Length: 236
Image (cartoon, rainbow, N blue to C red; front, side):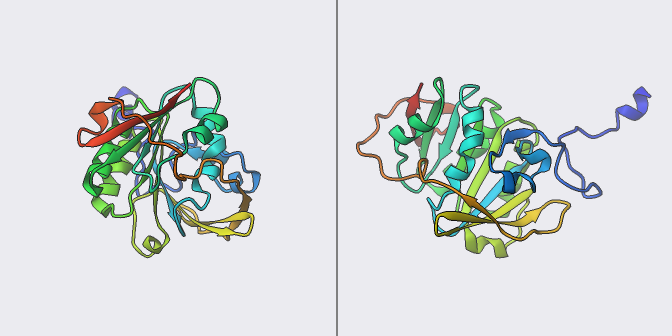
């Protein structure tokens, strides 16, 4: 009835009495062994995904490359506070024509968290990838709540030692490089038991390595980062 339906939660809202992640919707994983353990075999929207990395640039971006390829062209991909300047040529070679990548360099950890939150809330980004080693639990909670209302892929990179701390993220993966593979361990999957590590072959094409030259500063998305430098890494 109309009266009973008015009390139903928004489909993106998760309650403690519900099992699992929000309804499966997201971007293709592209790695068969890993996809088998993801909701709908996809990187999910409507939630915060947390990558706990042994070190920045260990393959976290390569792991997401199939998803970013699928998202590119629909809206900008936003990088917030990567530990090293991204290599524009590598991104341009790895994404289809029409892709847009913006790179935000906030002046502080608080600004990085704020810029990430604004980028997600704007609902105008295909994906937001943020390096937030100092993010607080309340800050991550705000990101989780913002993500529930959008179809933006939100992935936050934090140090592996943070796995000992609780997190509101619906999906937490620990990433450890092993030879020519990346060991991906499901530290937390909301509503499911943690799994053994899945080994995924990755490449370093999108690793946040030093750029060969200083990228020009442009007024890209000033509302996302009023105290940041906003660089248009490239626009196809």
